[in-house]
Length: 281
Image (cartoon, rainbow, N blue to C red; front, side, top):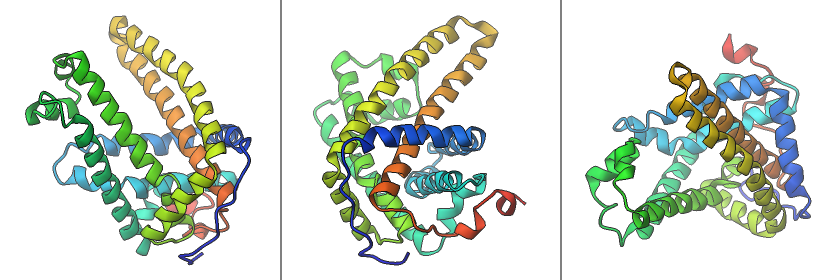
């Protein structure tokens, strides 16, 4: 579909929110191994974000990689087998590439501004050396923060993710599945979320309910890892699997919500992605 006005968003009843959650779980169960492979590949790439220049390019590529995962869910729904190559398809799709990178730049700028505003009153967190250590996951750097600074950091992180996620939730699939330009997709996506605030509220409650046992299980496994000795790597692997499963369910709800609100009649490169044979061969 090549239409920058595109279909209007459907207004759906609240019950669709919980339906998206269960439909996402069903899609995940249909191809758990292949979807896990895509998620692990994405996490591996995100682990390279600390590398100069390469890291920034990866950060602004997040919308394109997200579109690749959404495409994998579409292939799964159509009875196909998603291949690893789907993750990179939006990055090599011509006009979509620049739009996706543009969206990545918007998300990066909005995230930085949000975090800066929240942390503007805390001089300790603004220390460049300390921030660098925190970004690298230095446990001692976190331990050096007082409670107020730690709360501000967590709040800034959550707000940054929340704002960027809201801006991109419908925008990315609109650019990918309906070939919308960035501005049109951004406006149309935000309008769709406002019109469908009831199902999205129900979805948020459902995801929070799922997140509670996931967080408890991850916390228990982390504690176990500290005393598991040689088995600590195995235990941390189980934590990663658990968190990746939740992440995939989240991406699945994004696909299901978009499909019901806007429809997914066709997809770029659909003929190449019905199974993994052509992309892996």
